Length: 229
Image (cartoon, rainbow, N blue to C red; front, side, top):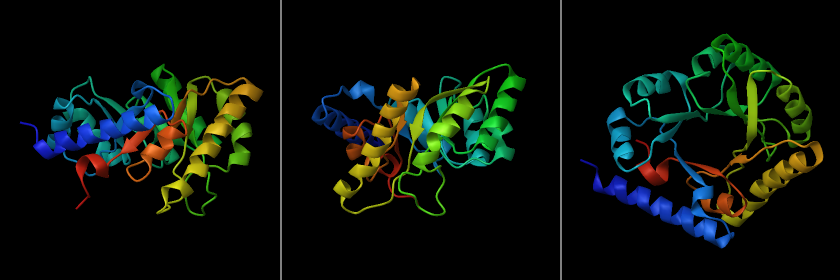
């Protein structure tokens, strides 16, 4: 049986996505809701599946793999946390999309593991739009060069960009960071000829602003599952 509060929270998030999409002249189905399932149990995720969501995002390899094994093969998984090169072999082929590629070294290792599996791995480049020290992601100015290098690899498909902006209490102060990523994506498409349809940006605190600025995937944890214990 589905927990009533879980079902209600999912419906509320869907309503908020639809409203944000409408405000920006978009359709709700242009935005994918990706529950961020860090520290959530298999039992809880089974309830989420009953609510109609079968697409989850995980931050940690060691936590994700038992969940992947326990849940139906129809469930799709994205890897949304920071990824070290030595963990790439555990991630490639298991996750549909890796959101957090921020170096040629990591991309090359992913490419190597994908080649061994005889497949192509979909990825996003993670951009540190706020220039925050200690945060994953490359500087916006480095994106064109890295994108060109990664696109030259045979077993990687770059589908777009991801960011985690600086936290701001006032949501309007977050908007410029999302807008910058969208404009950067648009420039790369128009000037370099890349196809980059995916923008992964926005979490519980700011996903509505992210949608208004063009996000196609929102990574939502707390608004669905409640505050982590």
